[in-house]
Length: 115
Image (cartoon, rainbow, N blue to C red; front, side, top):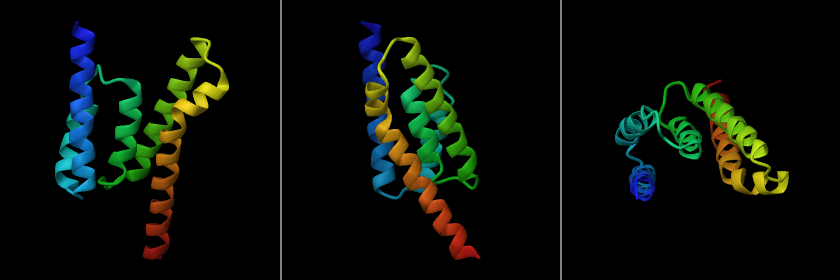
């Protein structure tokens, strides 16, 4: 089944990205995230997640967070159109929203330190 193979490929890619993030390999992470985000078939959840992670290793973190927020809004629209209840949507997207909050907090902290 091609869908199973695609899911396995994206899961493996996600594991590699997670490993680089945990190792603080920011250059390697940036390269892998760029490659992943260049994939036009990358699932919406991963696309939002990778924009959030890109904020940690980019010179333009706010751009990536804005893109992530847009992707999250797109996911909400798709799930609502699919008839998903708000509680289920909130549950499914809670990890992404928490990641955005954490990244925004870190950016604000850096901004304060630089002033």
